[in-house]
Image: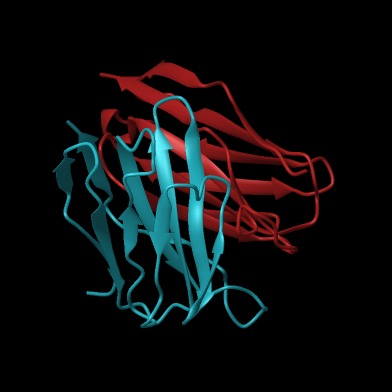
Amino acid sequence: KQEVTQIPAALSVPEGENLVLNCSFTDSAIYNLQWFRQDPGKGLTSLLLIQSSQREQTSGRLNASLDKSSGRSTLYIAASQPGDSATYLCAVRLNYGGSQGNLIFGKGTKLSVKP
Amino acid sequence: DGGITQSPKYLFRKEGQNVTLSCEQNLNHDAMYWYRQDPGQGLRLIYYSQIVNDFQKGDIAEGYSVSREKKESFPLTVTSAQKNPTAFYLCASSNPPPSEYTGELFFGEGSRLTVL
């Protein structure tokens, strides 16, 4: 059964730091992996989508990598800002179905960037 | 603007009442999903639909019902049989693989249901 783990559950950094958020998954039979941001009381906003054939995607200060063989993805945030404070979630889309509709979410990393 | 609209944003319900949460998308997506989010538990799938007039139960379907009569709409009814309905509900949509679609998932802004 596919499991998605995000460590740490919470992270606090000073403004300006570069940081890495981690996402690991147990089954490499994935179609894609997606990173989201969630602000308190809001829906999830898609940040980056990496297809299984890709190694990384970039958008502005964000860079996401994917290593299927090791079951890992990282989200790199450069020059962090207080506005980056949010919960970051990763989700994998499986190549097969199941009761979770073939999408498995991690529980997220809550990021706090201090001014 | 293309997107997913959930309504109402906040809803209060008395015990024993059914309530319906609306989810409408204009992204022309085939697949739609309902998730429940509780503190510390992550997202849990309630129901999903891959195509009009078809839907499947997720991990926590008990006490919920859905319909998919139109491609754009996937309403969720929280029935009185749901023992602990107070939660944040999120609707999402995507075009599922195969390869001509990216399979990217998009979410609405959520509906917060409180049972009094």
